[in-house]
Length: 466
Length: 72
Image (tube, rainbow over all chains, first blue to last red; front, side, top):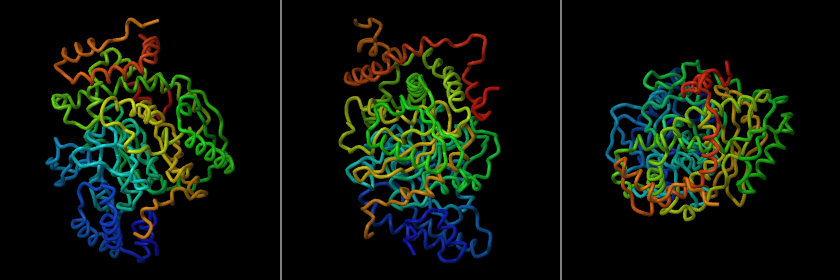
């Protein structure tokens, strides 16, 4: 049998059901992986191994008794801006290094109720502001190349899932912070529709753009995890009251005859050639599966982009107004972002909020008759840590890195990021973008792709011999 | 031709101070560079007419999302 730390949640659940392995085995395997590699990665901020083992014993008993939940016994991690009862939730910041919430975030409650086992709180860039450094907790390293960034701000979630330290992780995404680390670390990540996953208990950056969601090793796992954490919560006024569909039938559903739209322009300009090559290969793969890929026109995405930043800056400043006095003690990206925030005029902020509906209308027209868009998963492969300046104007790097992701934070559409190969030993990726509340089509298309490719099964060479 | 409406570092210092903020000098230059990079798009965005009669208040975007991306 493979090392349990390398398996997907779906595979582990199968082994638990067939009594070939237990949750205790799975937690021990992930703990052993943390012990073996986290000294190099720094993905784990709080290791809850002892408590997790106790919970694994209870989970093992539930499997034996026939009362196991949908994620029973699966080790998971939470990005450390997600509240965990009785466990520090730092936001990646020295300002909150001793913050111990009294309650779990809504999504954490749901993961635990489904039988999931919280094994680790995971590294994040300070206050989820993107970047590469963390002066309080140190940098998080990419398992594919320790000298490169994981991307972020869900840095630890990307690294920990890619390295097998946890089977599933929660990330959050305001401008791409689930999808960018998923792309850089070679895993699967979904930013579901805005409001699909309640944000209660999650530190905010921009309430109009913030999302939380799964980071996993397969589309099937992403569907499973989203099905658990999605749904209305009265403590988040923006969470959707729509019923949560059963995503399971989407996995392996036929995709022949479906149509995917390819919006070139903004989404393929200023993108690293390796990412375009990977996109072309993925398009050819889909066409070989009977999926039609057609060009679609989205000429005003540059306006969506500036509108999104016109919304993010003031909302971030509003959240962090009390932290500005000490901005030079914040990490570079957040400091740069906050220091660039006071200059958006109120009327431009409101224009950004009102133009959102116009952008959505453009997208609605472009997506008529098609199930999803296909764009690069990120604008490049993971860059070297040293290339992301820790002084000066690091905000410019952030704006470039979010080029293919932030448009869909702005419109609220779901985006599924999938590994699509390796270039120079580093993961490349694609992103599928669906209509609001149609994650099912993304799961069908994504799982079909992973059924005929093995990119999601690739593991970083640092794991060889572990 | 120089765009005389482009803010200056002094403008940014003044605006920040008006809100009670003060940054190191390099921060203003960096912020100005960031905003200058988006300025052309911002000027185009400002020219997009936003309807006075049709509902384009922020919540209309949430309604569109809740409707599954369909205008109704």
